[in-house]
Length: 271
Image (tube, rainbow, N blue to C red):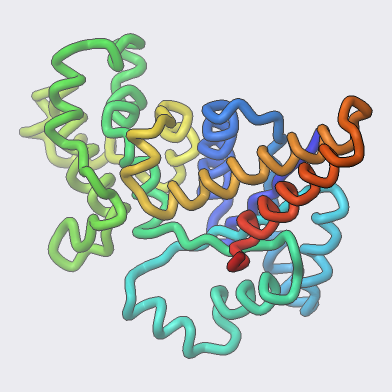
């Protein structure tokens, strides 16, 4: 089976959550692609040995595409990172610029911005033990609609001094959800704090997120990620057809032309 390897070197929690979301996207598009991971530890070892490019090439021996994903923390933070030669962004950019079939995608406003595309799914995560049918309950649907952001990559400074989507999910939305589940928590701030979302929860939360055209449209970087996965799926279908025997030479030339275009689109090359 063909595969795509995702590499989120900032967090293994993010990696597992992104893999879960990627698998949902693949299922949504009806593709037959395996999603694999590369760990934070693997990245650190590759950087220490100055062999990140070699590590990517090794992964490409068993995967069709390597996708790096890192947080985009805003214009100022990103500009600062670009000014540091050995920053995470610069190291990865150097590698993807020199290796075909390796790309970098910025997750706008942290991984939590991807989770927040489906507020109802987050409600399902928190309320699952109490009610497995949360997604179909009208009061929860109304609650989620009221708290659903239309563009989650625009969540900035959700709380004073905050950093964006992560703080919004942790300190605002999860508190609202938990107080709806258990109103007594409004008077028990310490207990409420203990029930909050934290980054280690992200892989489990991702399991409840629904992927469809509406949710994909709520975050630009998630949409870009999904488009790469879609193009990869189309490319693999074309490769399968080219390797078949049902087409004449003229048809195969046409398919080869389409394949070349799809590969350029996949790698972000101007046509």
